[in-house]
Image 1 (spheres, rainbow over the protein chains, first blue to last red):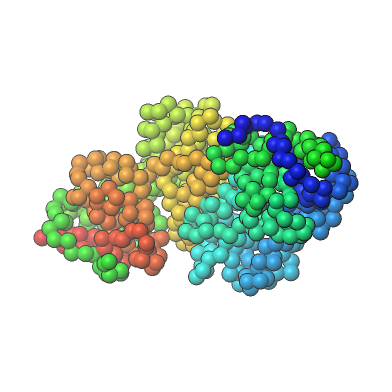
Image 2: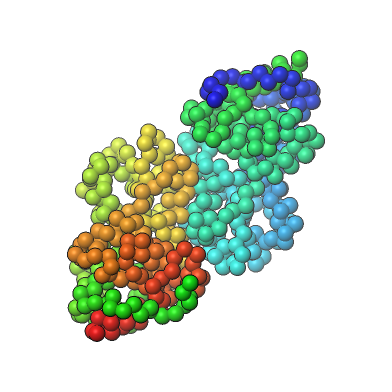
Length: 269
Length: 269
């Protein structure tokens, strides 16, 4: 087994010019100026970049506006996010959702018929994960002959300045157990979600590297799709991640800036 | 396989005088006057009766007071409930709980040291299952080197007049998933819990019959302990319970009164 904690594994000529790069976390230290400067360097390089996020408290428009205010040159077309992907699923299957989502992302569903719901869409609702709202979602599912629960991601928790916070995955498990059903996950680590990001970039999995702070959602998910993946030791990273029983990153870096420096060095060769 | 939906299975001389009877649900139709009259008849009979409840929103004192106001002759000593059983576990193992419980049951833990918590005790907290309270419990667990989560029952849901409501099991699953741990369950369907009720009555499992509305928690749990079990078609009962893939009741009755009538008929023989 590989030595835990080492830096980016030198993997020959795999890091080619034209290499796309995916990965974005909006929690914790990712916001540091140093990280964003590094990321800007990446965007100026010959590497393709795409932001693959499970952010589901904000619409894509709000997300991009926020990143732009932070000085990062990004457009909505460069973001792969769960809410638009979910709308596509709902339309394809004629599903009318009961939404248990954060108010910030509700506008993404404006064009979707929400009358007489025949499924529940769950996202990181934050404070809206009240007992009352959870019961309403539960009751909606229990009244359906074929209950369909769609979850925007299945993250266990994320890190805020105030500490670790429960993510949508915990509440997804609660509803799965109560209803005796299995949710359909849209977002990382769902293979379909990574594939749609690769497709949008027009590259193959082996040409791409994922950078993320979530050992299971980012690193494990990308690797199962045939991508390599780096874990940053920021955000929700915990030291025990480097000894994770199932997922082993292709490399560990102290922060996003270090990951980008390494990629640019390889890409220049 | 047995025909679903039929009435109490005639099982020879199994229903002896001296037969203890366990089972209590405080939800839904169990409160009907007819049911209580029947239950009073049971208490007057030669059968031993014990109330084996996962009720964890009320202290045993409050529970008994409520039943007494409803005209039922019962004492605290006849009730097997999760909170007192949990206190015993905490004391035996030197555990200091962070409580995520309903205010109604908090007094049961008055004698327990709750400073500097080294475990989390979860009960059906109802409206107190806020995002904030769930995060506090989650953070407490994540700060422990060996996180211990004790759950008072693991019910999926129960029935109130306003509809089906999520039970503690759903929130237990949420914390289990977020922390990557497995909870210890005190209450039905834990075998230890049924055994303590049998022990308190001084009878063997094969001499006892459980009556309950929960196909998994009441019927399945009791059967795994060697008891027979009837399911009543009231409370949280759903027609699909009679086709449950894993649990098959020894009999189905329309309500508690019918169950009691049957038991008394057999006991008189």
